Image (cartoon, rainbow, N blue to C red; front, top):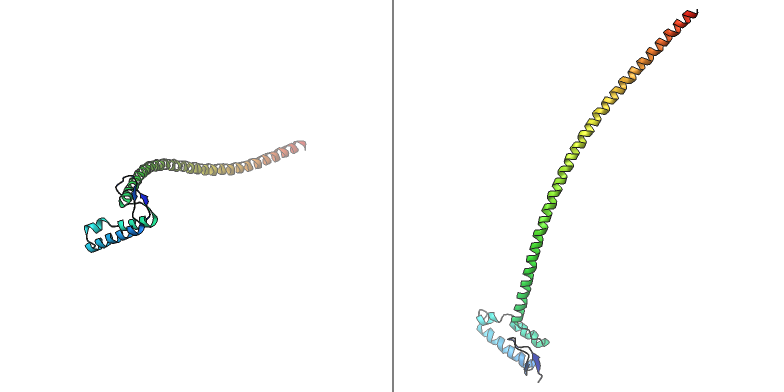
Length: 168
């Protein structure tokens, strides 16, 4: 007969147990038979749902787990996850606020860019008008220059003719 030390199901300190694994398996079999005899809609069977499997694992692996421990562990994990979710929700809210602010600033910058593009377009139009005017003036001046040069040539020719008449 082997003796194992296990934690009590009610949280008491370790107790010395004198039942063998075979004794435990026989007792568990009797408990299962009693629950099966009560039927699947039995309150007792419902209350012990999952407990048989835990007992089998405890016997096979020399563990001392209980449904209460698993429940407490699950509740603790649920609380921790709820806290994480709350922190994440706070982070999401802060990030959403930052994104909104960034989008607002982006809209302002886009408006500034649109205004600058309009200014550039206006400058380009003015540049094109001035270029056309200067081109026209250059054309006019080159025509004026050509006429002036022709007039100078005519006057020089008359002067030459007059000078030649006076020598003759």
